Image (tube, rainbow, N blue to C red; front, top):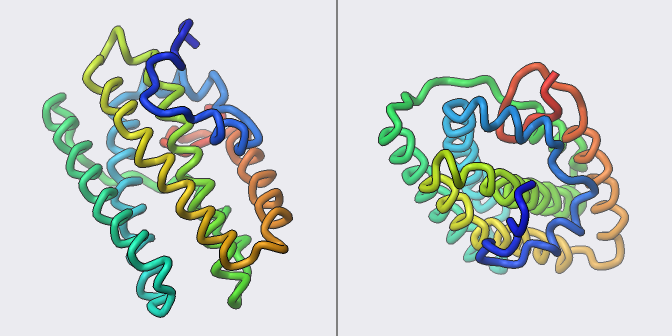
Length: 212
């Protein structure tokens, strides 16, 4: 990574880097730089899916007052980010197109328990991990974008504050629901997430593993 990259970050993301069990592999960063159109298209899709996920959770758990306000705000932010990424794409002549999903989020959610309260806790943990990885990847790629697309680099740094906050909010909701068993479930999902991030993967996506 370019020297003193962390000095330019608008928020301290060291807690997120400590939380995750591995850093984004260099091979993914190299691939991202060579596949910026795909990166932006999938990034836009991720923002829209994040908003949709928050909305689904609000409908699934309508009586959880602590969750409703946080996820309502989160959904609005994610949709605004979706709009902003689409604007960046348009300015660069990148047309939005359908892409297949990376298995990342789906494989994490496959391990969510089927009944509550365990299901709620697991869904919040998965949400926290996805937001944490997104934040870590924005921070990882931004320094490399400085010389080739400074506007996009600045935007990815701008996103760090909201992504870090979303991570904290999801994790706080999980902790409030199950203080006693939280650490064990977090470790379980973090170990799985590290496997997914380091697994060879043929297709490149924002949350894909090591390019094969």
